[in-house]
Image (tube, rainbow, N blue to C red; front, side, top):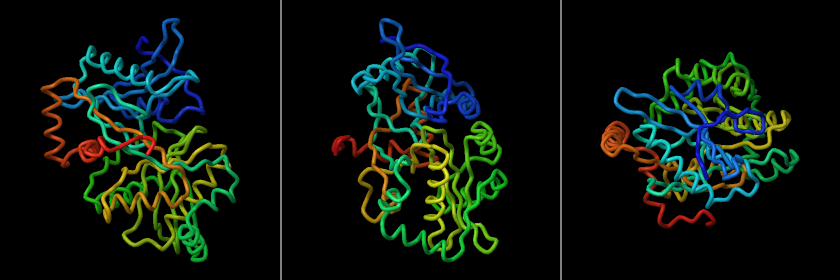
Length: 328
């Protein structure tokens, strides 16, 4: 296999996170690396962004390896990722940081620091009644309760600022930082008309919100927020109405974006996993990973992340790797 930069013609059956407009908005540099066979046939590709910090060049993937050939398997993907590492070593990158949480790889390159990760996806090609039937009894009850309490679901770009503030406040309650508003605006601009902002409103007050990028390939619940004590069922109804919206738009899948595998009993992460599981989707499992390209700079960057944030998601979850099987 040969790995080299390529250009792609983005279309609706690819993830929105592979599109040029999006990559341009979130990276200082960006591109796509193609994996080609000896006959120069494209087997797969991987979009990437390069983020330039004062002392570091960081590479970040925004979506997992995209297969092109129908018989592109896990073993071939590992070979491809090993060659991707060689490419970035030659180009002078410092660290490949963990990908965004919508990104779940089937494998990881040799020498990477990896951790198991997963997501729940709802198949929107199913009939509406089947999607609802697979939802847990408690989630269906909360949807009906929100409807009974006259919670209205609205969507539109005019809700961007209030959604931003609500997401930021929700992150803050979990002791997490969120991007600046100018970066949020750039994020939305990069998505263009391929993002929907949904809000749940009751009696003139916004209770909760969702920010959902999409293409025909999939919709992604990337950001959500709520009041400290929203009306019961408001978030459940938000997701249900978002699913119906995207189903009617011909979107194939609704991705609830990210759960930790075997989270600690009683933890907030376990509660989040149970909440997402109850929407009735299928659990897809794989890996998040990072790679130290420049030993000295990667060590400095890792120490800075641990000092500022206590480590990244791979640091928090890597201890589970030995006992993890992707088929468990």
